[in-house]
Each structure stands twice: as structure tokens, then as C-alpha cells.
Image (cartoon, rainbow over all chains, first blue to last red):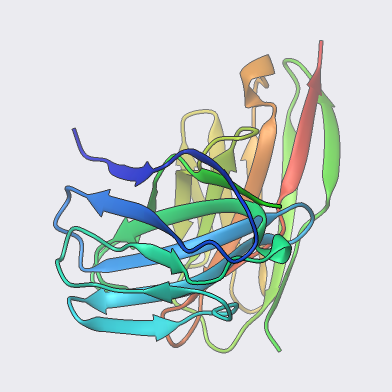
Amino acid sequence: EAQVTQNPRYLITVTGKKLTVTCSQNMNHEYMSWYRQDPGLGLRQIYYSMNVEVTDKGDVPEGYKVSRKEKRNFPLILESPSPNQTSLYFCASSSLPGQGTDTQYFGPGTRLTVL
Amino acid sequence: GQNIDQPTEMTATEGAIVQINCTYQTSGFNGLFWYQQHAGEAPTFLSYNVLDGLEEKGRFSSFLSRSKGYSYLLLKELQMKDSASYLCAVLDSNYQLIWGAGTKLIIKP
């Protein structure tokens, strides 16, 4: 079954404690991205990756890091989480923009609370 | 700057028709998407328009006018399960997706 998986689904942590949210896709997609979703603001892109070892900043990259060492995995790293990073996070993957229908397949979401 | 506007919330009656509008101002255009998102869940793909005109897919249709920077999503024969948020997104000239804040659709019996 084609899918994007994220872990954990729910996480409550404290300010400053490093955390990683994993993302994996099994569709051999080149393009992967991370979004955060906050009430009234819609989806905002944090980082995206066009292929292995290629990552770029999205609209709201401050406080986040990513890596793309393998095609299927795209972890999101918060080195020192702060309360303003409390949000719902989605990982998504697709074929390369402009080379298909560009339909984004989304993971189930990770609800993060930083105290 | 880049901007996508859609109504915050709409209410409709079960069995009726509703039209959700989306206007956009972006740096270039490489297609417009509509996604459905139920509360607390991931968005799911509904439609993709890159040329002007109407695309019909069952009870859902999507229309695009590139010259007007305008699209709408038309939902027919509304069902209670259609209660969700509907997200409009535009692929700009850099192939970056720009998202609207979403329209929350409430269906009443």
C-alpha cells in the first residue's frame, strides 16, 4: 500500500529537549516536504527536498533542521524546541514538481506540544 | 507577495450544492489543487487544474480561470461526510506550493 508514515503521532515535550520526527514514504518519490499547520494560518512549508542530499528552506524554517540521506526518509529535527513550535506537523511526498500531477501524499500528522 | 484567498467558513444543507471560491495572486502558475481535510486528519487530494475550464469528478467539480486568478470547487448532492475543510493550493513558477488557509464547510441536515 502506497503511504507516508510519520512517528510519533503525538508528542509532549519540554523546552530545549531535542527531538526528531521521522517520515518515510514507499512510493519512490523524489520530492518530500514538511509542513506545519496552525489554526487560521493554513499549511506552511518548513523545508523541502528535491532528492537525496538536496534540501531547501520553505517559508518557516527557523528552529528546524532536516536531512535526506536516503530517498525514502526525511526526518524533521528540532534541536531546541520552544513553545511557539507547538503545532500539527505533516510530512508529504510527491513526484518532482512539473513531472507529474504533483499530487502531494500526506502522512497522518504529528501533534507536537512544547511546554 | 503571494496570496491565496478563500472564505473561512461556509454552511450548506444536506443534498444541496455548494461552491467554494479561491482567488490567487502568485509568482507564476503551474497548476491549482484542491484538497479535503477532515478535522485532525491529513489532507487528501481532490482535484488538479492547469488549464482553464471545468474538471468533473463524480459529485465534485473544479473550475479554473487563469486570466482572473480564480478557481472554485463545486460539491453536489452534499452528504454529512462532506463536512470538512477544503484547501486551495497553487504551484508557483518555482514549483513551490502556496496554500490558502482553508474553508471550513459545515453541512446541516
